[in-house]
Amino acid sequence: MKSEVVEVIEQFTEVPGDPAQALDLASLELVQLAEALEERFAFVVDARDLNEKNFGSVAQIEAYVARKRRG
Image (tube, rainbow, N blue to C red; front, side, top):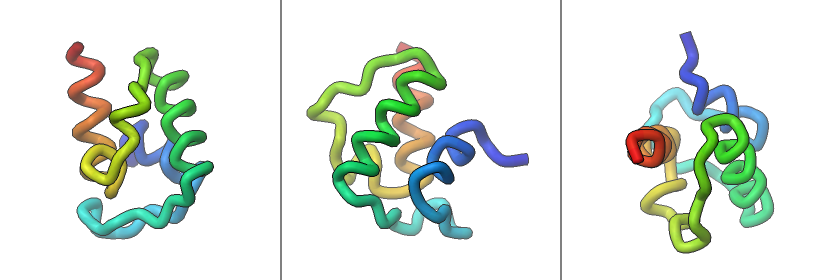
């Protein structure tokens, strides 16, 4: 079963088989993805969080969402 995070990511880019593989997101797609994650998981993505460390791969995005949901 796909994670909810992967379902959101798939709306904006192809999801690689390896969750650690870098995603190919244009800057506009990154902003749209962040907005979709905010809506889906009810948290706010700070502009300074929009970086490779948090949004570089599926694994990094899943970890970021988990941190934000824990508060």
